[in-house]
Image (cartoon, rainbow, N blue to C red; front, side):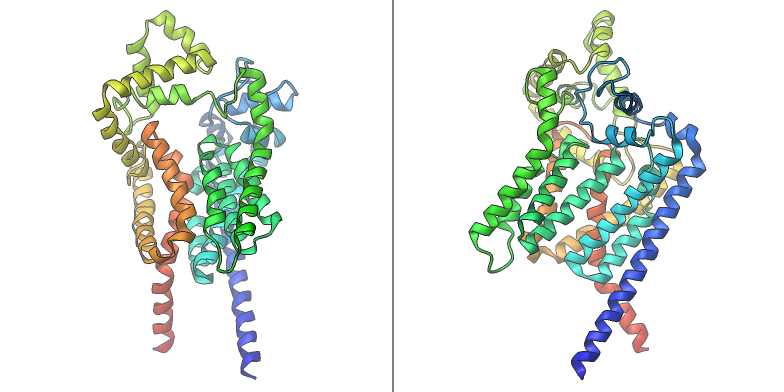
Length: 424
């Protein structure tokens, strides 16, 4: 009799959880559509990343993956441009708003499911509620830039790796690896996580799982990621003559490692520091030629070598700057700074999340093997930011996991508060 009662109570709690999560997801979708509708189409296109609209148009017209000068794009992978092309988002406002709002709502669902895997239903609802109204995601996930899609696809990949760890099936491992490959095709900075996540799948195992099963899952995840990435790599090799995820490394390395890096950054956009470095480094005629084709292989290697020479000549400056760049990316104040209201909204939302996330991670320190997948993702970003540079927009995809860790910290407090209230 008691078992039947417990089963009924468990089913009831599960129904309440699903209804609450559905309500949060509907709220997330509504606030994103309304926030973007309030700013309008003109602002949407005026503040878009400059290369995506012409690249999407070229893809939709069957001309290939080209920039505004009709030169093959090699500096950024094509997934987001394909997404925009399929929706004709370079000219149709509402399909893009609807699609990106749905994608961002998918991030809310991923946060809930990751939190449930780690700490149960209460943490899942807390995480979902925070991500649903998180100002940065509400404001930026519907912009014409890859951040929202990248945040979602990466979060889905992390969720699938957690699922693969539990299920240990070939399909779950392959799905996790394939999704991480898609994340890399959205923003290549996540590429170093691919071997780390595959290794995590082998080492962070549930009890009783044999080595053969662990290694098989790891290799399947790795193979699936490489299968997803191979068409882009083959295309890059055909265009460039060598293998590369992106030709932007030389430029970003130079921009993050020269005497003018911190002239305006992090308070202002790194683009202003880059323009100053350009003026100080080359005469106008050379600069004009460089800027016309900055992503040409020879230019990229030239910029890379200039940056490496600067690092070699100023190792102590490089070490100090690695810290300064990460402070900029993880800082309470956004980089670059905006108006007072936006700066305050970022500080009052991100600041508490960061503090609570650190508390949650400390409480969960005994489960470090499970959490090490998230540690690896964060450390990859920290390392890349140290070598290159980073704005708040680059770090924003990590806020999903910080919110999940914050929810892990908040869940026990909320449970005690509810119990005390019901007891009273």
